[in-house]
Each structure stands twice: as structure tokens, then as C-alpha cells.
Image (cartoon, rainbow, N blue to C red; front, side, top):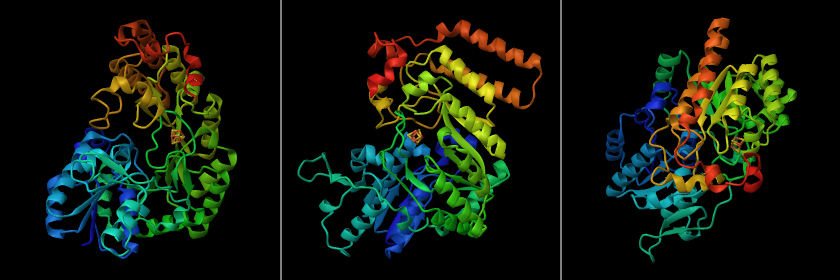
Length: 492
Ligand code: SF4
């Protein structure tokens, strides 16, 4: 074997995801595998997702004896944006094990792009910063002597500087590919799809896999991490995506597809063409996307329904316009309401991502979010606390408070990592309350039951001062004279 590709997200190391039990194949890793295979290299895959542990990787390393190990985080999964410590630790262990066996080790992904030094000091010879396929291809061509270019001239690479021990040398940054159709489809054949199917069917009664139609996102939400593509984005052609969908439908036979794009359907015209291409190929598989309320135009929603979309997760974030503006979200609360109505009219489930705890959020803002949920009745909500993700404006603002705790051990998404208005305990109460209220509404609970929720909200309001953070909040500390609505202006 020339190249072993591996990733380091072991589901068993993440209790929260283990509970959800929705394991998705490492799509980014499969893309890199097919790209290198198309260049003529003999490729193997270690898929950590359902594996027992690093020992299993070590056994494969021992038997396959690859010349190169690429520890490749799946860049299309939000979990990798969180840069989980268990995943980083496993990647470093795997890199060291391979290096000790004489492999050349290359690390790639979001965390590597942010912190190549960590991987380079723990066994990796090279770190890829940014989009990886082209850089990987050129690097392996160079190291095998196939194309005699010095590694120093390959853009997007980082390595320890031989001239300054311990220091990292970064080559010129690489511009992401503008035409992602040039990439071959992910190496689905390397995946043990039946293991995924068994787990999914046992937990949920159906089997879902992932695809992507875009890379990157052009919007500016100031808490959103974009370590690979920055503000750039590129779209596959509608025909190319539909063609892969048909292939996945025929070969993997999933019951459902999750489009893992940051934002699916950045242009309504693209969605209309995609629906046509899917229909022509009879490629439709029920699918779920993530999008924005302002993209849910009538044209786009109708085309989504035609293509087989059954569920849209909207980054609603907050029911308070003040907080949406502070986040640079570029969305009006009314647009969320309209998107929900349009989706409902076409029978597509509308689900909201909501976050609490953004700097400057008051109890009234929290109530505005609860009211948005109550009035528009999304089919589901995903609630988190505002996460300062590395590389974001938000992270820079609260970075001083993070100290040692600047990464998540696992994906338990309700732990406050900075000094917000309230404590983690308070946000956990909010989490329970909004979920309980929505569940009661959805199952047509009696007035008496709903009255209990009203009482719970009232009690929470009365006790909120008891949950205030003990230290000065971010706003009080850094912007003592500025009222919260003005914060967004300061950040621009
Ligand atoms: S729209 Fe979504 S992916 Fe794009 S910047 Fe905002 S949060 Fe990030």
C-alpha cells in the first residue's frame, strides 16, 4: 500500500455523539482517497468512526505497511470545527505510531490548519493548511520523485523549520479549487457501508449517508469558523451532484442523505437546475440540508421539494433582532417566520439551530427566542450555547477568558467556555424548558400542561439574577459604556 488515509474521530470517545448514534462516513477523507487513487496511488482507509480504538489502527498499520500515512480530518463535519481534544489526541498518537514505523506522516484538516505546530511536534512531517486535495497530490508526487518539485515550493504546506528547531515553516497559502467538479466522487467503495447501515437501522430504523454540493460559505456570521475555505466558496454543478446522488442510491442504497454543506443551495437557480437533474436521473433519495432563512425563497423551496428534500435546518440562532445583528447574521426575524411558513406549505420539515449565551444577550432576548419557537413551531430544534470557535472574531473577543480550556473535550455543546451573562447551569435549564415547551405544543398538550411551562418561565425570570456569572461579563468588562445593540458596530 502506498498511502493509508485515516481520520481520528472515534465515536466511542464522544459520549454525546454516542448517545445520538448518527455516525456519518468521513466524507472529506473519502474525497482525498479517491483523488489520490485517481493519480495512480494504491490507497487504503482506516475509518475510526466505528472502530474500537487506536489499537485497531495500529494493527492495520502493522499489516499494511504503508509508505505514507495521511491523518485526514473530515472537513465536512461540524464536529471537526469544534476541534475536539479526543480527536486531536488520537490523531497525534496515530501520527507517532506511524512515524515510529518509518512512515512519512501528513496531517490535514481544520485543527491542523489552525494549529499545524501541534501535529508537527507530535509526529507529523507535514501539515496541510486549507483545502487539501491538490496540496496532498503535489506533496506525494514530490516525495515519491514522480514530479521533481521541492516541498518548499508547494503551497498550503507547513513543516518544522530545519533551520530553527521547534519553529514551524509555512509555505505560501493555497487558493481553494474554484471548480469542485474536478474532484472525483468520494471513494465510497472503501467504506464499510454495511457497518454504518447496521448501526443506523438499529438506532433509528433507517440508514443515512452524507454528501456535499458546495465548499465554503460566503456569509459573515462572526462566530462561524472557516478554517479551510475562509470567505471563499465554490459550488459543484447541479448535474455533477445529481450524478453522484444516483451512484450513491444504486451502490450504497441509503434511505436518506444528509447534505453536509455549510449552506446548501446558495442560489435558487442552482436548486431549480438540481431538481431537474435529479428528476432526469430518477436519483431522488429523501434528503436533509442546512440553509439560511433568507435563501428559502418560494422558487428554492418548491425546487427543494421536487428534488426530494424532506428537512431543512435553518440557522435561526435567535428570536431577538438585537442578537442577530450583533452576530452579523444578516437575517431578519421575519425572514425566519416566512421560511418556516413556506417550508410547511410544501411539506418539508423546518428545524432551527438556536443558540443562547451570545455576548450581550439578556433574559428578554432569551424570551424572544422562546417566543419565536412557540409561535412558529419548528419541527425540531437544536439548541447550543454560543461556542467561541478558533479563528473567529467571537473567539478573538473572548479568547482571554478561555485559558487552557480553549478546546472541547467532547461535543457536549452546553458548556459555557467564556464568561457569558449566565452560568452553564442556567443555560441547561433554558435548554430543557424550550425543548419541553416545543414537545408539549407538538403533541397538543392541554392548557393545564402548558400553564406549567408558563410558571416555569416565570420562576426562571424571578431567579435569573442567581445564575448571573460571578465575574464581569464580556460586555461589562470590555464595553462598559456601550449598550448591547451597538456592539455590532464596534466589531465591524
Ligand atoms: S451562514 Fe452558516 S456557514 Fe455561513 S457564515 Fe453563517 S453560520 Fe457560517
